[in-house]
Image (tube, rainbow, N blue to C red; front, top):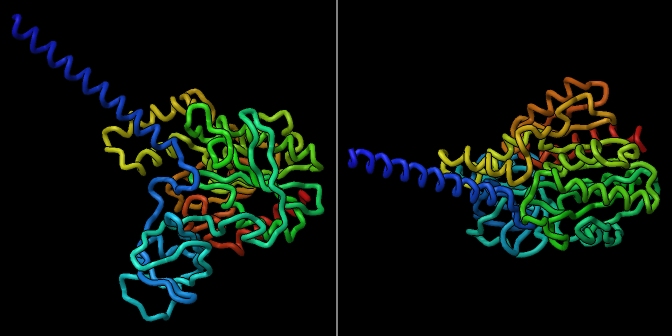
Length: 376
């Protein structure tokens, strides 16, 4: 009897120890998924090898990522470049892809360099990258000053751009030339956790649930300095921030419209995808997702952005597509179907998360033009 009791106790102790270890490992994986290092793409971003880069051509390892349509950035430590479409009819090894090399912003694309495909096409600031005059401004935020670029123009409708996961203020520069042609002022915001901005108190990202207050501060800043109306243009978690600002800000009545690119409207699935991208062992994924939801303040009873389609009060333009493997597009489809009076979905096929403009710049800008002109 004593032997059986001792054995049972040992088994129980082992199970408890294994359970505790799983919980701890899950929490570690959750923190890794929620902690975004400024300037570094999220885990799981597609990587490829440079075979050669000469003149206006670059040869990359053939993959689904290197074959993506449109215009993209290439990033590696100390290196940034921009590439255009795949070049058909150019002789090359079947294991490679030849693309148009648009520019090398800095660094050198030596053979063997491992690069990441990124939606960030420009490097620098609006003046150095685009030739647009801008001012470096500080937006007073609840945690401290938030750096922002202000690109002035004549209209009184301002566009506030908010980047998403693994990106920074440089990502929204892809739409700045277009917005400049429409004579719309642009305020491009860095928020908590970004380079030069205050750190989040716990060092983690919250998928917009706390970050939206920095966007609220940017709205206050814009209205203080001449804006009459605000359009929020957000990517990924920046899109979730825009939705939360529209739902919660005391100044939501001054928001004229929302442009949401690859919005995180289902954080459970997005967190699962982030955790999996960190190569978390499958048995630990459920623990990590629960830990991430807890750490980010996303409890089971917490309502997701636009969970109630009736909460939509201003025109919304959604850019999303079925190939987004981080933020599922089904919530965007459901929202557009539920509110066709206010929500327009522009579907982009073959586009990765946050890269809807990259896959089809002309189509993206035409949809954006039709949306913005009535709001100006």
